[in-house]
Length: 289
Image (cartoon, rainbow, N blue to C red; front, side):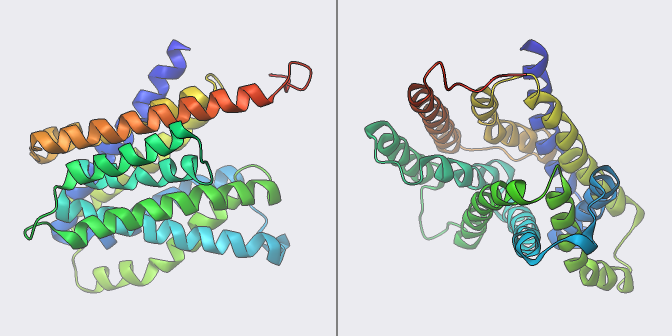
């Protein structure tokens, strides 16, 4: 368990450090340029690993894969643009509302309603909206959250229709294709400098390659419930990465809002797991390998 915990923390830290590293290239190639390079790096890793036979995909396999590719493209661009406007900690915390919404969707228990109310309070405390608030940046963070929720739902569907990682690999390829014009335009403008490329590739490795491998390892060692709870450290690590690597000092109310959102997620995951456990009798419990 200790090894799995260390792997998950390292994965989350790598993800957020990668986002902070990518932010250093925003001035040269913009969020879209960083996302383009990140997608190309992800494709270079996923395609050889999964080897999807694209010619044999049926339409029932292709359409959710294409949608997932569009979600990848939109989620990463909206998140990185939000980071450029409102900072890493706030943007990632807003994005984190996506998986929390999926966990709470359709539930009417008192605990889940309490979690939903707490998440809403957390967002209000986090943002403290006033006329000077960057509502576009906040909206982009919430768009990233909606995309993350869609990613979870589409990934479940694709997992039932395609084996292994063929679906995510194909979807990442779709997203990378969408960013080819962006890369071409930036190359034509001479904006892909060596240092900008280095930062963008670093973001791809730290935010895509390392978390992809680390999460696969961690999920073999720890229960899904524990994995879901540890995911809650992402907003905290994002705030710390923004502070250390980007000099983004957060106000006290932002830290308080992050804490409320994280606590709501931990409570929601714990309650959902307890509810599922009560529904499984000992005779029907699945065997664990």
